[in-house]
Length: 287
Image (cartoon, rainbow, N blue to C red; front, side):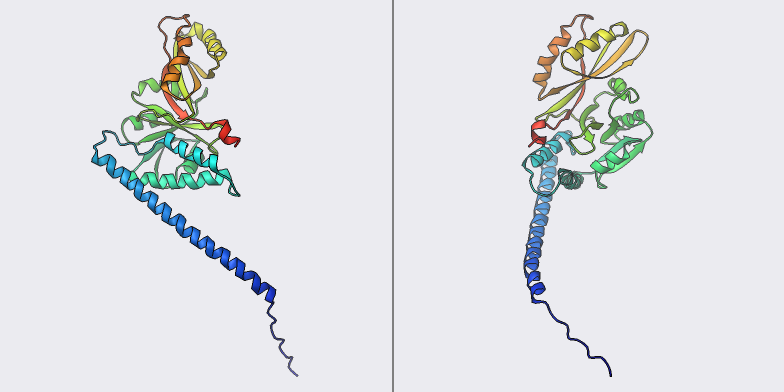
């Protein structure tokens, strides 16, 4: 005798649980639509900015502004709360910013070996990337307008491109890259555009001196609270020092440098500014 099929019992409790879930999902869908609308609205405003710049015949239209990107992300980090991590927040906004940059025009970047991960993490596929074998090729490509920006590894005793930067007239450091926005700086962004300041910055300076005085100047710079980054022997008689200071404007730089210029171990020495990059202040990180 065939077995009788047992009727399927519906658990009312489980059915009741689907109702609140359904309501929550509908709210999520509604929020998704609002987010999408805002993304499209922002894109339109970016297009309007690009048109306005062209209509006013700006001599040099700057599409990518690292200081502006930094200020946007710093403001968002400061107001952020909830379950989404800061790292995820930064990733979301960096992808959006890359998309909005491409709306204003094509941006090409040139970079060297060994920093692929950080470049690809910071700049989405919307940005065209050109890889070169060394820093000199990147700087040459920048000078020849083959790229709008160059990404080079942070200076150290092996990465000495900074010591030759004066040979590339008009090229400045304008930004930086780190693994998670507020971590250790691992690469610098260079461009032929003017330096822009955010609320908190690191200014990089070089100083050419007689090789016999390198120790005295290094100790003096460090004693004044500047961060001595690198030093390089250019010849038997000449050396160059790279150091940094925290600043908020050109005016502050001029005030801080009076002490160095007045250190008369060598006459008429003046530090050479090679650029500025934004720094996230500790008060933002600490909430």
